[in-house]
Each structure stands twice: as structure tokens, then as C-alpha cells.
Length: 234
Image (tube, rainbow, N blue to C red):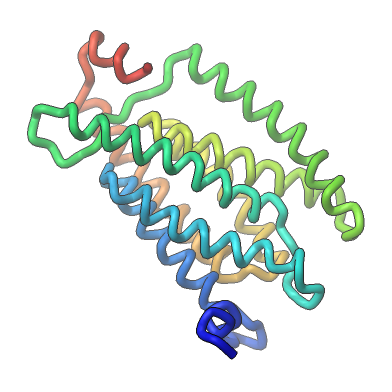
């Protein structure tokens, strides 16, 4: 057994359930990234990407191993899109940090999305969930699951993507989107046997509520002048 194989297979058994270290460590990076996002630090993005890579390997495992946990196609697929969106967020936050002249360590100033932005956001969410539940059902046609399973997986997938995009844009709404994702994600992950990730989602819930309060306060205290706000929307 070479080192890579050992790292891939390494696991701990808790209450009779085998949990890979990849899932544990990947979620650790994910939590660190969430803390960095709350503090509006650029390093939140690359740290999150490491966690995404590890968690992708966890959720896609069932595609190649019939004995693995139940596959979550949306959970696996969203890690890929997390990486893509995170590269955008990393670039955007870094550019905003460079353009700040107030000496602040914060990469961005939070704000609410405009009515136009919010409308587009909600329409994209509805369309995305409708399309992705069908895609996941087709992909998993040989794997029996109740229909609600694919709707839940689709919402987690689409909701997570839009939440991450909203974070990159610096919108307060991204915290609310994560709360909605957690409300579906925790039961689905627990039902599917991904216990560390489900537990982390519960912890995320508390962090997300706190993060929303912090960003809301910052958006009021650091209100951006109109000309700069137009530039931020670009």
C-alpha cells in the first residue's frame, strides 16, 4: 500500500461507522474558510478550495465503490463549482483589498443586493433547482431513491453555488442562503450516513447566524458612497 492509497483509505470508526479522514479534514478546512469569510479575509478562498478537493473525493467515492456510502451527486458536483466560484471570489476580494485606502484588513464592504440583483438571484435559484433535480434523477437512474431525495440534493447544489457567488459579491444575502441550505442539508446528510459533514452543517448554522449579524452591522457602519457602490457592482 503506497502513501496515496493509505491517505485515501485512512479512516476512523465511530459508533460502528467508518469515517474517512478525508471527510474530517476536508470539513475542517471548510470551517476555517467560513471563519475567514466572516472576517472578510482573502485567505478564506484558497483554504476553502483545499476542503472542496478533499470533500469531492468523499462524495464521489460511491460512484466507483459499490460498498461505499450512498452517493450524493449534488454534494460531489457542487465541490467542483465551489472551486470555480472560489477562484472568482479569491480574485475579486483580492482586487478589492488592493483598492482600499483606509488601511482596513477587510477585503470587501458588505451590502444588500439591489432589487434587480435579488430578482435575478431568485429566478436563477428556481430554474437551477428545477433543472438539477432532473439531471440528478437521470444520473442516478440505476440507484433507487425517493423523488424528494433528488429535489433536496438539487437545492443543496444550487443554493450552495448561489450562496458562494453572493459571498464573492459581498452580499448580505449569502448568509441567509446558507441558512436555507443547512435546513435541508443536515437531514439529508444524516440520512445518507455522512455524519461529520452533517454535524459540521449544524455548527455552520450557528456560525452563519453570527456571521449574518456581523456583516449586517458592517454594512451599516461601512456604508459605501454611491460612486464606489456602482464600481463594486461591476
